[in-house]
Image 1: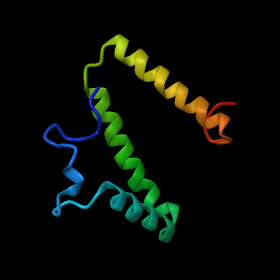
Image 2: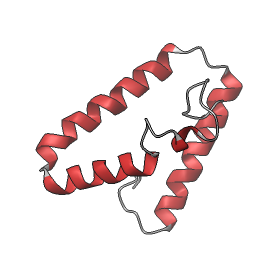
Image 3: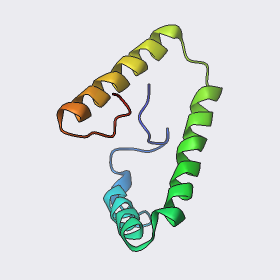
Image 4: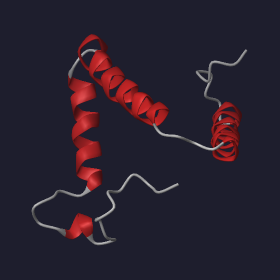
Length: 91
């Protein structure tokens, strides 16, 4: 599966003066989250995540890819659980 970059993006896309680097966008979001209550940014974040989920569900994915993705997600959740993150949804 391709990464989150658009197909026409190249490895130097963050060097474009017209587009700020991704880390600046992440920093802006972190500042926004720190300065606004969860009641404000939570629904916004949910809308983005739900949109991504809907897009993913609209794409035909083979059984093999679905299994690979699920295994990867399980590994990430296990790693987070080992790191002391108690919000994995597992009991």
